[in-house]
Structure formats: C-alpha cells, structure tokens
Length: 315
Image 1 (cartoon, one colour):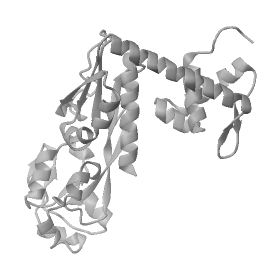
Image 2: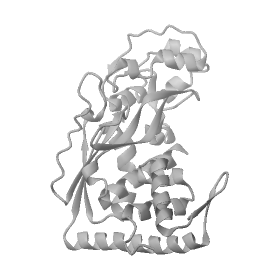
Image 3: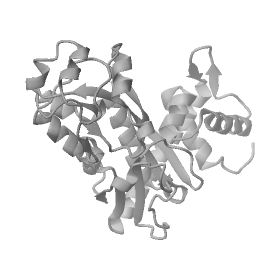
C-alpha cells in the first residue's frame, strides 16, 4: 500500500456517503454531483485495493473494513473541525455577510436564524436586504455584488430569488422551491365559496419578479383551478411583497402569494388561503457562494443549515 494519505476531499466524501448510505444524499449535503461522490469513492477504493460499499439494487451497505474506516474518518474530521473552530475563536470572531431579498429575510430567514447563531457564537452575522438579489432579465444578473475574498475573517454570500443558472466562479445552489397560492382577508374569505367567485373582488398584482413573463399570473391560477375567467387587469400593482400582504390583510382584494413565506400569517389568521390550488413558480431561492470561500467552515455550516431548514419547511 502507498505510504501517502488519500486526499482530504475523498475522505470527506466517503464520510458523508457512509453516514447517509447514499451517494445522492451525500452529494446534496456537499453541494456536488453524485458522479463526483462516485469518482472520489472509486479513487479511495483504488487506494485501499478493495471495495468500501456493497452496492445493492436499492441501497448501499458498508463493508466491515469500511465500517472501521468510517468511524476513524469521522473522528478525524470532527477533530479537524474542532481545531479550526478553536483556532478561529482564539484569533477572534469571523464575519459572515449575507445579502438577501428583503421579504425572504423578514418572513423566512430571520425567524429561523437563532438556531444558526446559537451554534456558531464565533461568527458575527451581517444581514443585508436588497432588491438587487431578485433576478431581472433586463439587467446583468452575473453581477452578484460580491467583493474579492482577500480577508480570511470575512465571508460574503448572496441568497437570490430567480432561475439559478450556473455562473463561472460561483457555486450556485438552489435550496427552496416556491409555489403560489391565492390569499385574502378573513372578511373576503367568507364570500369565496368557489374559485370563480374571485371575479367579484379586486385582483392585487405582485410585481416583485421584474419580468412579467416569469411571474405566476391570474390566468395561471384560473387554469389550475379549472375555470375560464377573463379577470380585470386594473387592480393595484405593488413592487414590494410586504405591501402586497398589507393590502390583502386590509381587505383590498385577493393576491397570489408564495406559500413558503406566509406560514406565520396563515397561522395567526391574519390572511387566509381559501383554496388548495398551487401555481409553481419559475423562480426559486438559491445560494451564490464564491468558489474561493466555499470550503470555509462558517460557509459550509450556513449552507448546510439553510438547506436543512428549507427541507423542514417543505415537509
């Protein structure tokens, strides 16, 4: 056997695959492709000269030798992580700046942030709301506003709302799909017996997505509801999602709202979703991380944390 050690990347990929007993789930956690996991595992098997996984039709199993390796690798990676955290704590806090769409920050991210900040007391979090984080086909979406990462103690990432196309030099990781649902005030809800009853009320238009071709429309909703209505397009237009919800709660009319952002509003009865009719959005929320900082512990942990939260949100 060669005396040199296998790559740290191969060991990280092996630990995740062994823990999940799935190349696909390991790939999702590490934000790589299942093929990348498979290649690293194959290199590791070549290094040891033996198989590490028993590949069954619907699942993976570790070989007895790989069980031993998994325990030792996990112990080692845990020790590395503790060492890095300890070193950073000794040298002072690190900063993590997150630029995010304002509505997403206030309605989804901030109410959940405590669980992350409590687990990373060595990280000073800076949250910046900006409408520039919403994709717009009328301007250059490759300019994410991220500065070169020269400072080891400062990391910047962006949460965007859009298509999530690949961008050279960045890791682009979709994490939350969005569905739109009709919402109204309790007063209006009492008069909405059937989907076609919406013709008696004002339709509020959410222009948060700048490109109207990509916005879920009232025609989309009517098609999903199986009704043939020509709704008036003269209702008010808002370019801020907070204004849309305020208008709905005030009884101005009905609106199409991202279901994943209104859990608290529905729970307290401030607004109502009277029909179980969902219109999928072409947009989703995704993380944009410069490849130069993707291996930093605070970045890895934040990305893993927000994906877990999004997974819980979708259950």
